[in-house]
Image 1 (cartoon, rainbow, N blue to C red):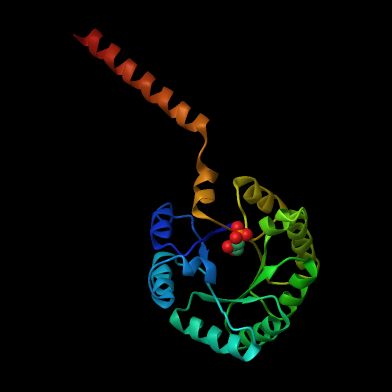
Image 2 (image 1 turned 60 degrees about the vertical axis):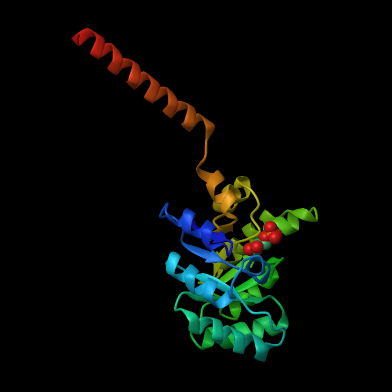
Length: 221
Ligand code: G3P
């Protein structure tokens, strides 16, 4: 599964990218609004930090406006993926932008049928929001499983980008379901690697090593 970071924080992206396993970044207007600086400049810097798809979302609500904004975002860097909401205008814009050779991420997906329409319009990615469905007592992960199955049934090239992942279990489940991508906050990304038994085990290995070295030193004297 590809791992994307769901943030516009350059500091967070810079740190996480040092592990060498980050495949892309997703931003949205809310995430960019939290950062200081011009969104364009932030997006350009993100493209310099991570060599993979970087989602930049349109804020227009009509198709013509989305296409105009999408083309502008795409002109910033070859790795920019234009993110559009799953509305009628968004699907029209997806068709036009993907037809013009741009990568498109259709976002705010809350049902498998929305994903089906987005795939037919030529989306590169669809972003089902898992956590926000869970929030309203609807199993978000079932939607991911359905979308993965539907795309496999018809060999659609569109990738399922599981979004609104809030904790490591969401990531684990998305991987089990066969989602192509999981996008997550940096805190969740770090939680994927962390295990107390790894820390404890390492502590013991090092303590045993030091003890053995001291004993060898004492024998040699
Ligand atoms: O990628 C979508 C994400 O930013 C939404 O996450 O936690 O606000 O539902 P959340």
